[in-house]
Length: 196
Image (cartoon, rainbow, N blue to C red; front, side, top):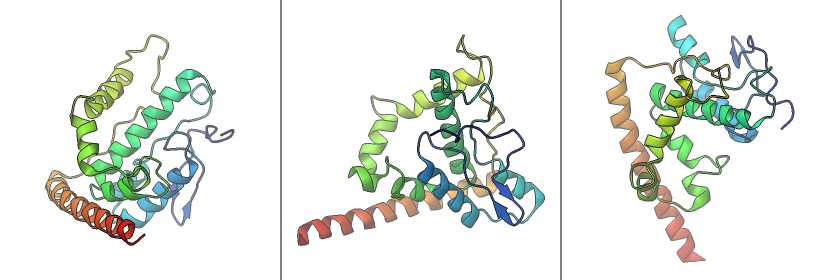
């Protein structure tokens, strides 16, 4: 993935009338990173300067210099940027869960792994505690908990937050939409496999 970690600090993905592709928001997956840019562009309607800024700050990627050198720490930085991007998208546009869980370019998609929402929830909140471990990882980097890493990989800015009134409505609608969408998808998959 030579070149995908070589972007200057002033690089912007979203510009007026233009989209710049290139950086990886998802570790070692340029296809899903580009699909995320398309999703943000088509679903984030920036009606004000503040909303446009949230759109621009919804994606996190490693910048050139010491953050993109191809060291083991760079892999941690990639996961840090990936988690911040997904958290920002979930915070600003909760309905994106359907996109994240069903995109064909996402290798962890439920469609690609044959998984279910229950198995995903079990991994997130059951004995594995992936949700808790992810939050602890972000906090450890934010707090400078790694002795060999004295920076935030150039992506230390905070995750943008939505207005609270829309947050609760968005979460409710997105949960219902995600469950209905996943149930429809699983029924189509089940009926398709019966016909074979």
